[in-house]
Length: 312
Image (cartoon, rainbow, N blue to C red; front, side, top):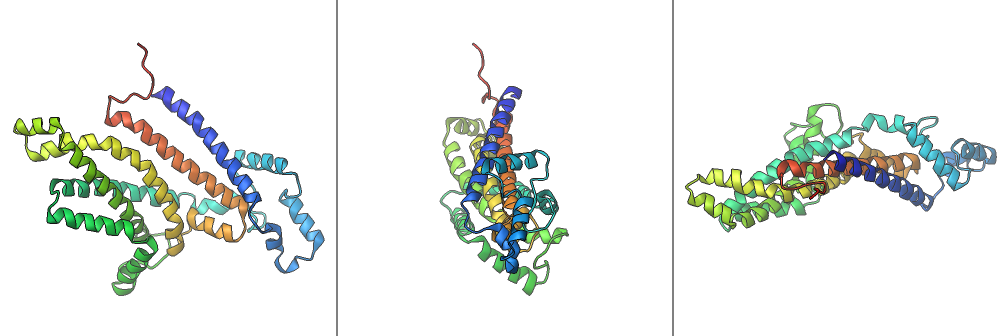
């Protein structure tokens, strides 16, 4: 496994470098000039414009700008922000650096177990009224947009009942509604997959054998059947985490949370390209690391899976 992990980490370095190249090239095609946006009403000052371009290195050839950007990544500053004078990108994002991952990780730690429980519950009662009710609830959870659900929860929990703050960050209460908004879609997704996998597993011979031996139904479900659904479910965790990261863009904007998602939206509108590029790179790193952890977890769930080739 160590050899496999080392090879995957080496591959991730290539992915991260490709992400850097793509974001750098994409920014060159974005309409608008960040220097002109900085100048605002002083756009006619040619001397100031030239000085700003020199300060930010925008008067240099693109290959030199790219090498400068790599150097700034290596030293951990990620360059200078266009929006905040004499401020490095790291200083801009440092306050919210962990907020988006915290939201996404908290949501996935709740969504996966809850979805598994709902999926098993529905599979045990297949084609019953309880199964139908769960399926309708799951479809609703997937179908309702997160901004609509956010508006409903704000009205219910903040305005009508006054049990949670409307927006902001800094207390555990501020975490509840954003996480709840993020939890609903992946919970529904995991529950639907769990129900499908469980219905397939319950038809297998080893399950019928376990029942024929007189094992209690709870042991049959949770010790034998459910265990065989974990590997295919684990495959979806990386996809779900990517969806949660992108969901933080909307949630952080709605609830005025100073995380990377909201910073990305603000930097796009302000043409603060160094901040935008850095956030894209960080999200790529978060997503790829979670997928690596998922791959390494396969052998823990199923020892038959080997991550390296065995010699004959």
